[in-house]
Length: 419
Image: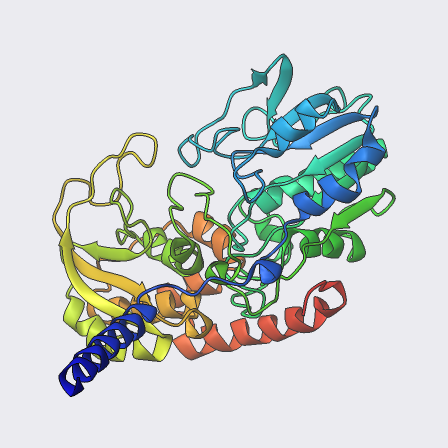
């Protein structure tokens, strides 16, 4: 009898041990009532019926879906809404066009799909003629030079000029709503990759940013703007906290982690270091044939200060049709580092990239090259190129950046919709 008790006790212990050990392997999923409810869900349940019979213009792409994967366009079409035109951003309606490639107009079930990344970047008066309301529902990644927010600005401008109401269906910022990084874009460096005087990483949702554009006079103010808020999203949230599946926003944005590092890693490519382009880990690894990973590891203390783990890698960038053709150091073996993000809330991606570039500038000043015109438009002012040219110190570069970050932190406060 005592032997049977011991056996049962042993089995219970084993089961408990298995349960406890596997508990740490399963990622935590938010409770159903804490899942983020997207702006498009709120719109469909509370607002779309009021637009029945009105001519609609939709600004959409492949990310314009409900949490169950159903396309917003399909739902509105099946509900009998009068869709007069569809507008698509960079990468096209399907999201499969390579970065920087012109996108052609197309059709969806007889509805014209106008490209806003082709011959024009802004809806024309003719394209929006007779439209009574515009609905914008596109997932952004929270970086100033990711062009979906430029498209948002130009759509709002066109709507204001034709007095058309706009509904921005809000979505999470995958890099969170707390961290702000980078200088404010100066007017002389405005372009489609930098259309707003905001930092590189601005920590706002598209809806909040639309309100700021209107409130600060960056676009005409005389039109109706409706921001359809999410439920349950918090500024401290990263994508893993939302309970939502990640839908790659463009060919080289395969994961939420890519979005987090993108605001910084992009500058590695700008100084002709391979930033993971032409590999299956875009932006999450970097290297060059001449790069010494140990020098960076020593300088960055293994990455712990930034909340990341750095692993030495060797890889060869290749042309990847549909993703990137002719990457930096194509077909050449690159020595470098893979970045594994362990603490998103601690990871300052721009400062991380600048710290790497600082090491490389000191050790290989002849290996870094850049186009100052492009770099200034990307960074937002000329200080980064002036640092690379030796005219200002690294400390001066960071000090100016910190001043701008604080200015923006205060300015954005009245436009924040979420805690």
